[in-house]
Image (cartoon, rainbow, N blue to C red; front, side):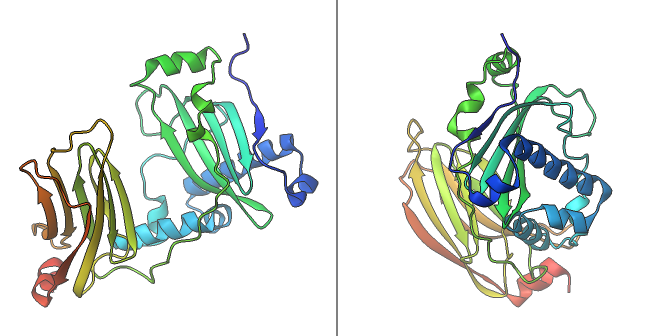
Length: 297
């Protein structure tokens, strides 16, 4: 039985520009070079190369996130501990292209350089083509500790797990999100507790969030502003979930003053087993007094 193999599976018609530029085998190698260049830029803290090899959509999302937390850009791009994993020590399982999108799936000891003993897991790299150039568009780490049977399958060369649609490119390049102009006025975070539910939030018509059967907080892109702010929400049951479970939606304003706790700006909560409203809009004001408390001035 062959063990893990490299396979390029094209899911859409090859565009003339791409077919004239390189063969399928060359494209597989080229995508690896793009990732290795991007990874090198992250390790060397090379902002110019990072920008050249990163998709416009991802650049905007990263910059928006950094400025929404009032961190320095591009310095904060390189502030995370560890480093992106090397693919030279991993097995390439699938490289697929659809339209202007591509995904490469790798398996092995995915090492982020933060210590410990890496185990065999899956690393998925997404790319988009902008003009004639392929760009890095994100990486997804799939940890297999909770599904050891899948790890055994992959070690034996059975690739059915990575042949599901979750590992296929969809051919859709989303438009770049609205870029915020600079660091926000007030750092804000959503918090959602939604067992058995799917919750979608839209804060100030800019920052969208999706929560599914979870308890999590997210940074609000664009932060909060002086005066009136709003949070739109929608809630739906997940099949098999408890429709009477408690649910909580909140927005917090985060203090920049040491020792000052966040301010709970708005909340929608159901605790008594009642059915929550399917959708709605909650509004909250950031007053001058709140601003002085959050900023210390």
